[in-house]
Length: 350
Ligand SMILES: Cc1cc2nc3c(=O)[nH]c(=O)nc-3n(C[C@H](O)[C@H](O)[C@H](O)COP(=O)(O)O)c2cc1C
Ligand code: SF4
Ligand code: SF4
Image (cartoon, rainbow, N blue to C red):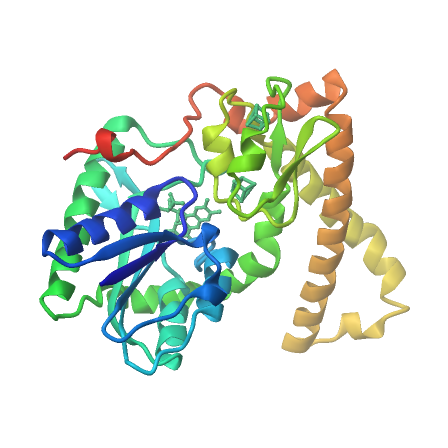
């Protein structure tokens, strides 16, 4: 029996979970896909002989908070159950060459947690499906998506069959050097970066307040405030809302984010430090300790000002000139900036 747990924003990890369960069933074994976002982890019991799978996107060189919370709360085992970890990453194809994504600490952290809980980690495989990070780049073209999917489906099924034959697939360990090198960035993303992205979403005047983004969000991060979607700090930037909005009304407010960062940094250098340093000498400390203290201070201040500025932006969006300014300085607004949704079974190549 395979219990295949997954979290998915735009559908890639959901498809990986499906390929795994299909491979299990093709060998006459039972298998079940379970959506983490709809599961009470405290109600899970692990039985002897049961195999466990985990599929989730990589966010900021780590698993997203919802997957990490699930992982940390997952029950221990006394039966050394086998575990397979599949992190979907952002793959692209440039001039016919497939460029893989980067796992960072996603695989290593998950493997460590499972090992400490008594599991046997027999599968660690990154799956380089089309990148969903539409805040940073336009969605890939259909032919590229199809080509990437064909490769990844074959690789995932090979991995499943190797495990079904009693073997291992630890492909993720090949990436160990670069994963360790970028590990510190995952901490910065987890503590600061993800909140900046969460506060970059806006709904344009095309929004008709249908509420689809509210009901579809896996972490309940959107609410309608004065008839307009408002993204809370709980948003994990999974990109589901932006890619599913029936009015294509959700944009990443690039102009707002860049303007905010420039204004904040100028204000910190020109105003905050000259005023605060004489009062808080610890902030002028030298060496690593001083740098870490200033980083913590600036990050906390930045997040506080960001949350306030985002609330003001949300209020301002009611006024046409502010809405136009925010939308026209957003790259996602342009027609060539495609959205991305993972293909469903019927749309897949086989
Ligand atoms: C906020 C965010 C952060 C991401 N960070 C990474 C990353 O660190 N490394 C990577 O390879 N891909 C990254 N990606 C790409 C996704 O992991 C990738 O497209 C994944 O297959 C999406 O899976 P899903 O469709 O199940 O959500 C990121 C995507 C988003 C939206
Ligand atoms: S899904 Fe789109 S149109 Fe519907 S409420 Fe959300 S932003 Fe508005
Ligand atoms: S608000 Fe949108 S991007 Fe954020 S977690 Fe919810 S669905 Fe994902």
